Image 1 (cartoon, one colour):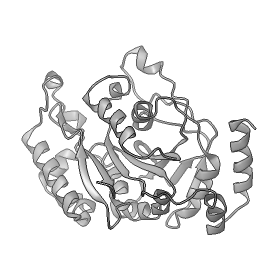
Image 2 (image 1 turned 45 degrees about the horizontal axis):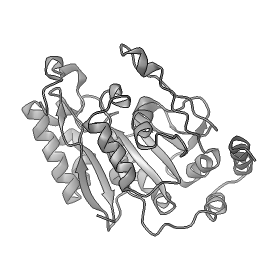
Image 3 (image 1 turned 60 degrees about the vertical axis):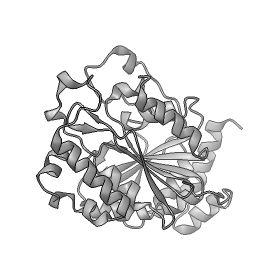
Image 4 (image 1 turned 90 degrees about the vertical axis):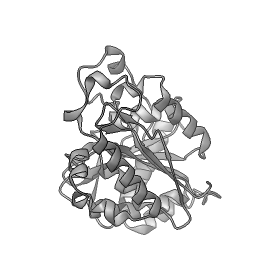
Length: 296
């Protein structure tokens, strides 16, 4: 049976299922992994990182070799901000070029990873705190494919996206992520994609090529966030609007920050924290990324 036909068959079977039995029926075929799948928050930065051969993309490639090969990838991207929560559930998600003003080579990229409709449907059943719509229109935006095409260039691992409900407060997203924890046991890589510090209006475009150039406030709040992540003080990060003027500058809008809360919500009791790509770019953006892993 062709993979496309297989996925359609699985989706049809899942469509009539409701509740936890649906999840059990599918995942009974997925053995619990010996190693709990790590969770990532990835600072994705400029879309050009999707085709660039630089220190950031090099680390993404290295990360894929460092962690177990996933059964599937679920991305919470800053660039899918919706009313309500949705999950992509098509056989083959399209590559979305949700940006402008970049070279044609970036628009020519087609990342042809399959989706996983059955897994999407049953992941939706795991999320009891929200009604999750199965989406057949979105695809993979640049918060997802610019990273996954470096990590898994053969596009042979299913990739799905979970949207961010912009009507909900930060704590909702943190708590919702906890309901996805079972996916880690089944070898599914969950990845938040955004930036801890992201203020494009204050970017120093003339300093983009200056290594690790960051405004004082950007470096200060980035360090403070890292301290809270290391110590497990997630409540401070959930209440980021109370973190002072530096946080206001770093997070003028929430979409690039909220994926971090999804990653932190998935932290297990034995997970160790490590950081990678921990650098500032253009003054008001940081690429700081987080790995939660039991095998550190």
